[in-house]
Length: 345
Ligand SMILES: Nc1ncnc2c1ncn2[C@@H]1O[C@H](COP(=O)(O)OP(=O)(O)OP(=O)(O)O)[C@@H](O)[C@H]1O
Image (tube, rainbow, N blue to C red; front, side, top):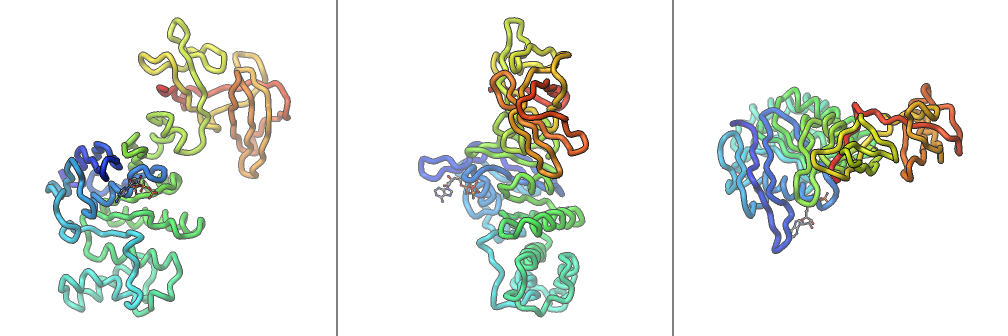
């Protein structure tokens, strides 16, 4: 199969396991984000894909060939890593053409390719500029163009936008995704920013402690998190303890509910319900009794904090559908079963 296949890859540093039996299939032309907290092993996994580290166990295949032991420069990769800074003494054009020049590509072909790439990254006419005079965003674009010059089989980026300010980072996320879609290039990005991953990826791979907890499209990660770690790591969520009653029905915040089912065989669980899926209503009529404890008006969204069955639950609404409630008021809350999920504890 084309694309990238990671088969049962483990990486140990001494007795410490940084990546533990990871398998992942990245179809050709797709965009994958490796996402997780600091130290979860995402950079180590990326370095093995790049050939900068050897797996302790397992294998890696690219376009149908085993590349586990193949040196980096023979893998036909495009890489944007923090350690691969632009060459300060070369111009923008010379930076972009670098890998073409060392491969002995003819000068006129190099020039054409540089112009083509400069157009692609929205910096036409920049070939003769010094890289020292570029802004942070322009530098990252040049680094991207340099990595793409050889038309690589695989495009690898490690925290490519983390040095940019928030606004520019958001704009570059969209730009990078559009460029990837236009080129149809198989791309893997390491990030610790879940919003960035959700913006760009076809598949978000959530890692923790050296293992993949879930690999799925962004909306599925958000709506159907595999476990409470993923639910908590991605976006904001309420994690509410759930117990099964003697008939196996879910008891949530003191109320038995037929609408939520327990995970198979579990007597305890945790309900992940996004704040936008909690509705604050009048008490009664089957709503879970709750007391308003805090209201936060964020301008674009209103957060209503309530206490229900000993737990804190946060509801978010738009200013237009703002609940007419005040702190201390007895209210009811409704949790949307269609968009909430009970996870095994
Ligand atoms: N060369 C090494 N020798 C020993 N331990 C290492 C080495 N490289 C990484 N580690 C350890 O492996 C774990 C995973 O590191 P890795 O850099 O892959 O994490 P990460 O998810 O990329 O984190 P960050 O976002 O902070 O870069 C960490 O606990 C790290 O200390």
